[in-house]
Length: 179
Image 1: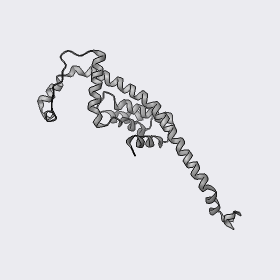
Image 2: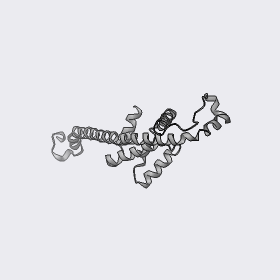
Image 3: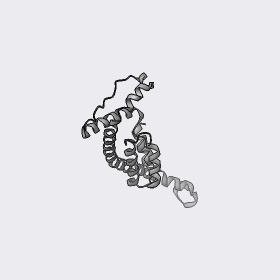
Image 4: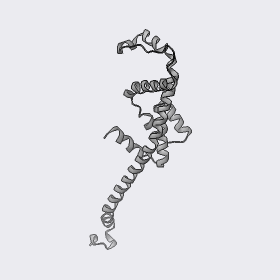
């Protein structure tokens, strides 16, 4: 089963209205792509309690931003912020290899680029809002469809099993199965 199907199945199994489930998931998606990197899960749980939303639905949304998406996403969000706000003066990231990440010089160079924080914040906030706005109707429709399909399967199973199970359970009722 794919990641998307597992997520939708988990959302559909939540015992809350489809609207509240979709809202909780959407909040989680917003937090997942927000600029508050490292605080996503904690903020998700805290806001779920404060807003009385389903914690599982919020966390499913929070965890949509998978680790291998982080670097490309935040690089694009920063680029978008630069496009919207203009490039900050003297901002340029040094080219570095993976082994350079473990050196103090690399981190000193990154810290010197603090001017990129505002474009990164603006870009990721805008994208987080767009993703959350798209997540609500998609989650709502998906949960509603999944639940409708589940009800149809359950009613078909009940109608196929129902009369035979009833006659077997009550043989004195005068049914043909009892004779």
